[in-house]
Image 1 (cartoon, rainbow, N blue to C red):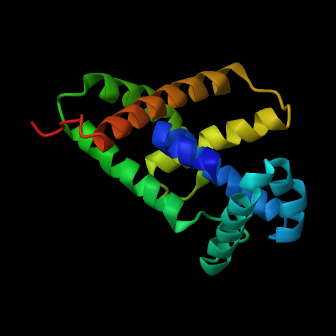
Image 2: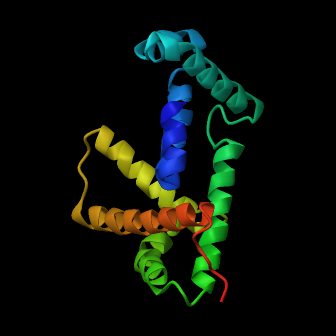
Amino acid sequence: MKIAQELKSRNIAEYLIYMWQMEDLMRAYAFDLDRIRKDLVSNYPQEEQPAQEEWYGNLLEMMRAEGVMEKGHLQINRNVLINLTDLHNRLLASSKFPFYNAAYFKCLPFIVHLRQKDAKEDTSELEICFDAIYGYFLLRLQKKEIFDDTQKAIDDIKSFLSLLANYYDKEQKGELKIEE
C-alpha cells in the first residue's frame, strides 16, 4: 500500500508496472489471503500489518469482482493507461514538445515490431511499451539472457516512458501547458 502510494505520487510509469506485478503476485498466491498474510503481510512492522492486509484483501476482491483472476488488469490500472494515452496523444499533437516526439518516433519501430508479434491490433502503443518493460522485468527476474538489440529497445522505451511520466507529473501539479 505504502509503496504503491509513493510510486503513484513519484512516477506513474513505475506505479503501473508495480501494480501489474501485484496483480501477478495475487495470481501466484492463488488469491489465498492466509498465505499472503503469512508470507507478505508478516514482513511489515506490526503497526502496518492491518493496513497491508486490508490493501491486499481489497486488491484480491477487486480482481475477483472484475474477472481478472487469470489475466488482464484491474480497471484502476487500465484507467492509468487511458490517462497516459490521452496525455501522450496531446503531447504528440502539440508542436511544443519536440523532444517527446523524437523519443516516441525513436521507439515506434520497436512498437510496430512488438505489435506484429502480439497479433492483437487493438492494443494501444503505450500498453505495448508497458508490456515490453514488464516482460523485460520478468526476464531479468528469471535471469534469462537479454540480447543487445532487446536491451537497446528497452532502453529507448524506458526513456520514452520516463519522459511521459515526467510530463504526467507536471500536468498533475498544474505545471504543464499543452495548448498552443
